[in-house]
Length: 363
Ligand code: MRU
Image (tube, rainbow, N blue to C red):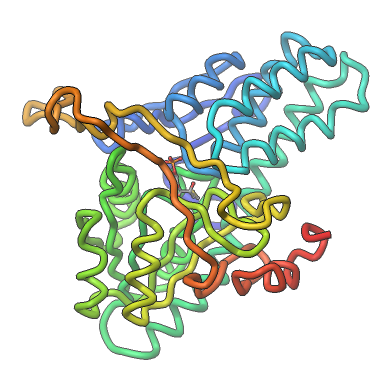
């Protein structure tokens, strides 16, 4: 594992010389690791909307490639605007998608139509490469926190995480997992507490799989257990990802993150969000303005997995017709966040803190 080659698997690859991307079909994990080739914009949009791929930075990068695919077919102004709008509507909460789409539009708009598609592919490649570098830098800053904890008491550093902010959510190392992967590579003993993350089980299906791939000790727990684990002093630090961070430092992430931050604050456990700069949204004054995705009731009414014969199955877990609320994300107020681990260092979760590291974003 090196900075250039962060993972034994890659969630997204653009094979050199092609106009195609290959993505891991995350719906099949942890039971199978299969790759899907995507060579048209509609399929790329479906991959985002139907969560074949997911995770804020990965959604952004796939969105950028999807726009390049759209421009392969129609590079006129109307086609560009239509594709931007359609892709932007696929998932509402992670700001990385809008950020990446806007960036591609800004790069290609001044160009003649015949030059736009190639420029969009170059921009998408740059977005993906910058994500790998940002992951690695976040890993380095988070590693320092883990080293300090390792020096403080004997035994493994016990890290709690939520959902999947791993390599599968990015183009490289992951965000919340990057410090973990670097610390493990450095020989720091770790134990990762992974929350299941109902309803879609990204913790159980994806984060547990990633940790197993690397041989990092971990324990899976049901979402409701995070408070008890912290009360029992089983956790030294919480590190989660983020889908959007408002100007004041409020952190929007997978539903259940707020509960963990509350329990962490009540038990004196430091709570960090790993935040690459495309996840910052300084246009929104506070987290209350962040659009929260509401998803299908069936995700809550049923659970998908494989049976003991290895056959895919979805089983119902509540009476048919039960009313459901299925918000996919929540907002953790900045006051509960110990720090934002960014590619430029650890920021205080506030406008001043973010502005100190990213002054150009706060104007
Ligand atoms: O609904 P998902 O699986 O796309 O949600 C993912 C998360 O909430 C992650 O924690 C977040 O995107 C950060 S990924 C580096």
